Image 1: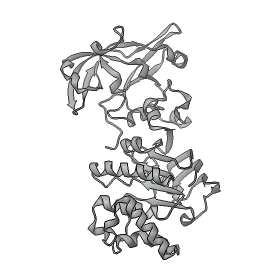
Image 2 (image 1 turned 90 degrees about the horizontal axis):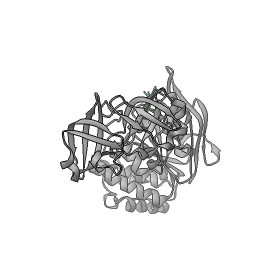
Image 3 (image 1 turned 30 degrees about the vertical axis):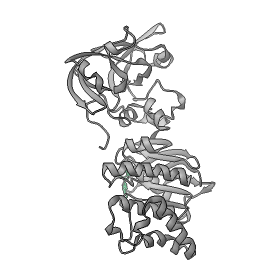
Image 4 (image 1 turned 180 degrees about the horizontal axis):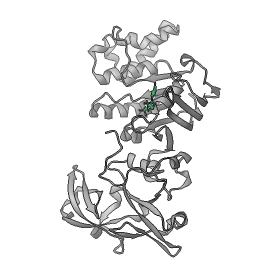
Length: 395
Ligand code: ADP
């Protein structure tokens, strides 16, 4: 068990490819932490630097109290699980699990005890005599997990371990990983491009883009208080609606002018948005925080009018795509309200869940300091304007 600390870590590949920039993170002992972001944002490189599979160009990585920059991978007390399982095809499951321990001259009895215990935990005890080729994808990935577990490492590293599995198996394996983390009570670092995996598995998630860590916080904090327009649209499905416009007013009251609609902004925002008075900003609201005007508790609510484009019926809920003033946005509601969705609708944002983002940097101006936004969030250009435009999520 160990904490893992990354301080000002950089990775620059030959050809001046800056894969990871000034990465700072304190991973607590026993924490389950997720690196999430689109393909190419530097997640795997960061993980591989912790594993010792990539050299660090600048900065320091510590596991426990030991600086491990120059420690070879086998001496770092870590175990890594890869997307492609990396099993030995000619060995039985038992021997795949036992192999690493034999290399470390662990006594035979101890090996047997560890292998049997891990196999039981992972539900693969009946397959110990099979070869990996005689297993399903999910079973193979369990063997790969088992090979890491028997090592009793201080830190587990996972590089997209569920990406090769079908959707149903991924859900099963997610539950199993959560149980394992509880039972093993060990630090786990997990890389994924899938925001659902990140949200459901992690104690904390680190959202990355272009080699930068933009926000590190608990999943619900990231969802409720995204650091910038990129995080707002990357985390959550459908993504947050983001409308360009202008803020104007004074301490007596600020208005967001989105062209086709105007909204009075809540008092709680005044201190933060006075700095962007009369400037371009983005107004952000999640699809579930838009409600039909007739359902809104306050008859005085600000209104966005629009025409319904399409409606996705998902069973328990529906997602309504609306066009307003040349922009698309989406709202999400209980499917029981389907009958209330007319061709032309008026919707009200629940302003207690609204956000204002800086028009130049994309930074969320209305989140608390405790939301884990890093200074780097300001280095990126605002991304993702309106729901319905190309989504940055990988799938
Ligand atoms: P992710 O895991 O988020 O998909 P990676 O960490 O694999 O991203 O890659 C980050 C960036 O570094 C990408 O631009 C990728 O093309 C580049 N990169 C990764 N490995 C190498 C390498 N061995 N040589 C040069 N560039 C690399």
